[in-house]
Image (cartoon, rainbow, N blue to C red; front, side):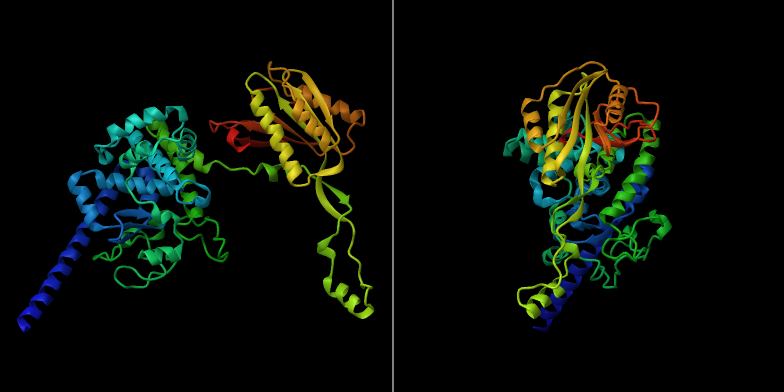
Amino acid sequence: MPCEGASVKEAGKIEQGVAKQYSKIGREILRLSRNQLLVNLRFLDVPLSRLTWFEEPIIPLATDGRFLYYDSRHIINRYKSERNATAHDYLHAVLHCVFRHMFVHYSYINRDLWNLACDIAVEFCISELDIRATAIETQSRQQQVFDELKKCKQLTAERIYRYLLDAAPDQTKIRTWQSIFRADDHAIWYMNDDQKESAGFSSSERSDQDGKPNEKGDPNNNSDNDSGNDDGEQRSDSDTGRGDDMSQSESDSSSSVAEGSEEDWKNISERMQIEIESFAKQRGDRAGGLLQNLKEVNRERYDYSSFLRKFAVLGEVMKINDEEFDYVFYTYGLQLYKNMPLIEPLEYKEVKRIREFVIAIDTSGSVSGKTVQTFVQKTYNILKSTESFFSKINLHIIQCDAKIQEDVKITSQEDFDNYLKTMTIHGLGGTDFRPVFSYVDDLIRKHEFTNLKGLIYLTDGLGVFPSQKPPYSTAFVFLDNEYNNYDVPSWAIKLILQENEL
């Protein structure tokens, strides 16, 4: 029996030694793969060094934006099967972070299709970079899918996801594509901290692989700590590219943004976009996929509802003002004098409502009638849902190409409903913005408007602007799906939307 116990103990030591050796080899392969990427893609130095490594046998490879979880045996097997596979997978996971794919409102999406769309977008970027360090066998099969997705125009995760939703491919095709494009596991994207801990993932709130405290927000806790690195190598703030100007965390305004948060990766991707644009000029269009995805994720999103409210004016409405109603004195009065409250609630309130407004529509040939109708319907829905009308309004909807084609006056919601039912697009000629402003100025002189708050102009951007600032606020809404920028006069507000945002 003593011999048998000694044998079991000895076997345990051997197994532990083998596991430690696997861990060391896996970590060295990761470091080698990352260094290969750094040599070839200098503009990716910050994101490539951003993730903290944690060895987790429960999953082959995954990232949540802060940690890179990996199984050493998986890393070794991938490296043995294809020398470039580990570098490829590492870059794949990092690009998910750069494009902020895991920071999505997952309760509103089809997870399988979103995961696939993200993988396709990332693989498209990797294939376009065309570097030897990330070349793997499946890339030839991926190209066939890229060709099929040309109708998306730009292979970003958002557009691919929209295409997959509309096309509704069968499950066989989805599974085939998943096998071609998957390089990491996305299940962790949809877990909160408690779910990660229940699933067995290491957490920064607990400890690293050596059992040492791993404090949240530690600036030295970057990927080179390697979760138990024998040589104790770590990187400083300057090495990781952490900027002093990063915004503060919403959960703790006194501390900087937590490393690996959405805001952290947003700052990284915005800086990276600037570097990529310079890089693309040197290497032609080989970074085109990266730029497309960066422009998509860094594009400023606008809430059209909030934008429209900027044109609101103050007006007095007969409505209980809850903010100025004191329930303490009110109920005290009822108790003291039975049915006589001490203070009556105010029956009026200052609220923001749209009263006088102009919607100008560019009906040139480059703006489709369907888009115009959608825009007007969207505007109407916003006004109606937010109670943005006074009981009496003065709204003019003007259609114009190179000249005024139609002016419809709206004084009530009933008028608006009737207009939408009978709306017809007029014009479809060239574009000139000046006639609308001249026409509105003339309406002001005729006292058609007494307090015109603003004018919003829906256009494709190809027109002549007035030379002088009008006496009212003006906003140009550009519908653009190609991420173009537009020059507008300094006095005008610019809003760029995509058609799917209407």
